[in-house]
Length: 377
Image: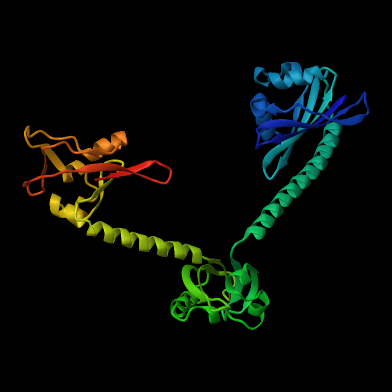
């Protein structure tokens, strides 16, 4: 036996990597570099190793055409016959161990095969252990990053609300130290009195139904008396109904943004309804999204009935002299992105068929990135 090879598959990069090669003439093992080959070049070998306990190749000259890449590599080493043992990890092919001879048509006797099989199994165990250690290290790193960046409170408590495990930004959220909750302080004591009844309902549901989950929001009073909004996701442990586990996040900033957004929306609605001119807003497809009361009076369309309809149906306009249909300004704005006005002598045909002389201008509506998201007129 003149050569011994240890190859490992990199499934992530879809390449075959050579790790070690033993050469009899040099009496030592060497690390083989720059022999990374695409899976496509070794599909024949991969399929064979997936299905066989080992491969006994008495003459590499008889390799099929689809194995030409492997054949060229082996022949370049002066190898004529080959014995290959697959190495598996968790049911998947991790690599293979190859033993090569320069003898043409060599027959490997059962004792040699059994010995080399034992060697390959020992190496397989070592590689499996190395792979598990690498996965464990990667898992520990992911856990470390999660723990260091966790922005909430993780807990496990009994049905009497006594915590048995607490972790996270406890003091940052509540103002109380972890030790205070583990000794005498109870979470129920800091829940806002107005929210306490609904929180108790959720907790009772978890207590009475093992394995159930809950997702709810409520207010707490921190140590300085300030009010904070939190979101709790909890689960009663099915295997041990005495305990509940979950996480709690501070959502005070989110609630403040929601409040500001609501106030802005209400102010916008008030302003919109206070304007004497009719206003219609459409999306990028030209469908009505919003109308004020003045627009309802002018068009004869109720805003709820108009919502989602094509703007040309709600805002039906013609030329007063020719009686021909006029291009809808909203559609033109959506097509060009420019601010446009109506031509003179434009008439609106209201929903009941009555006619009304109108004047109009239409502008595109853009988001913070400058992208057009609709039009208003």
